[in-house]
Length: 317
Image (cartoon, rainbow, N blue to C red; front, side, top):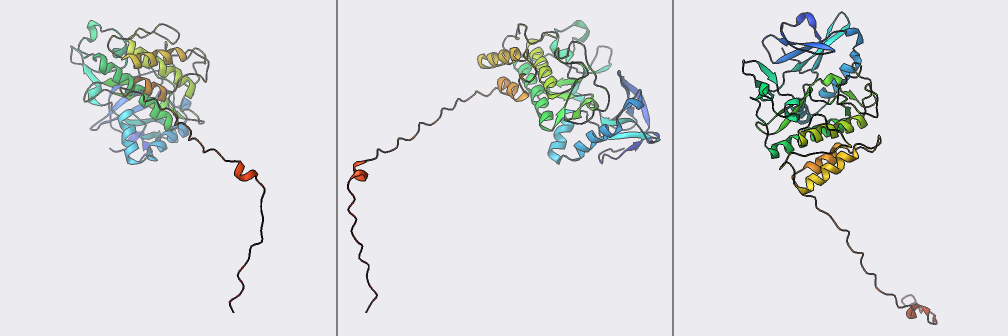
């Protein structure tokens, strides 16, 4: 089935396969014979169907290039699933295959951020770890994606190790999950804001989701990726993986990470992280020197004025 037009779909029309995931707010089922998944809310009475429709409309309102970009960056709600006048959940695409890994027993798991920010363990030794340059590129991809969402007028809310996927192939990239937790700036959320332990903004309630809390969590995700440290926070020493950053990047990242410990409204924005993590140097421009104005000879103006009559030529005879 297709959900490209964003129209509501009746739950009774879905051919559900196995349950592939479960979280605090919903269960996720495969749709038989296709690439789509169905997230069904555990308590539909707590879901704001209007807010969910708003997220669906956002995607529908994008141009094709931006819609393709959104689909590459996130498992976005494609359409609502309804029954009897109630919103039960939504359809979304599966995560890209290259953002999964296979265990020794043959099981397929999502390549979550936790496998990037923690030291390798025997249980997931088959996860290929990035080299230092790829680690920097992944941090950059993450802050660029957050910046793209903000530019689209969105607040993310729950940025954490469980809802960001990553991959090294074909190039370092990230993919966001649980996108029904996003909301448009100034509008209602689909459900109460979810919060992940150790990923909270210490200056805001866990139920808050604003551009500013996103800014704090941007510092968490960027710092934890380049340090490969799952618990480091702004205000603490950031021990960056050797070879991950050059001197300019190192200075910029450390400065922004420390700045993120400041008051609300003072946290660095994703664009600042992009500049710090970029592999392009910063060109310092100097202002042009003002043009020297020619000196004025006041003696020409201050002398006695000799006004004489002006003879006008008379009419031709």
